[in-house]
Amino acid sequence: MNFWLFKSEPEKWSWSDQLRKGSVGESWDGIRNFQASNNMKSMKIGDLGFFYHSSKEKKIIGIVKVIKEYYPDYTDETGRFGMVDIVAIKATVNQVSLKDIKQKEDLKDICLIKQGRLSVLSISDNEWEIILKMSETNI
Image (tube, rainbow, N blue to C red; front, side, top):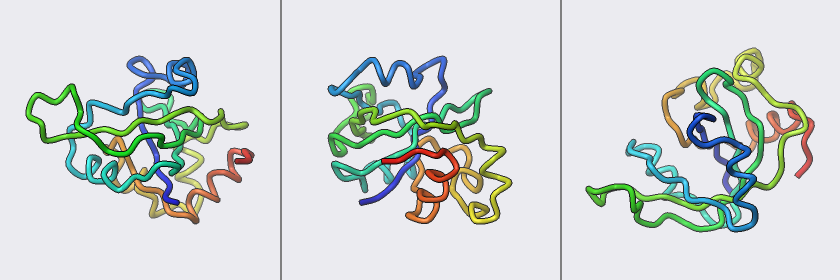
């Protein structure tokens, strides 16, 4: 299993929006960055990810699961990009802010800091475990 981080501006697509989709989930569309797209191409059904509110909030607030692997993004007129479908699993017990992550020495190399503009990031097993502990959330 691989781990990911999905960034969303809450005013465009929030954790509440994701929760409302229930077990049907929602497509993660609109990605127009090749590295983020390549990350989605690597996703497998069952992979887990953190749901991160970007913009002003800058915090991890939930956990999602990939329920459909990479397929063409209907919003991309060029046909170059794709999307995956994700479903909300659970909210984190404690939200983990970007500030908290930056203060953790074991997370100094996390993509969220090094490549902060990417909307879909790969998270290592170790980073996943550290953030889960920070959030006090059990999966």
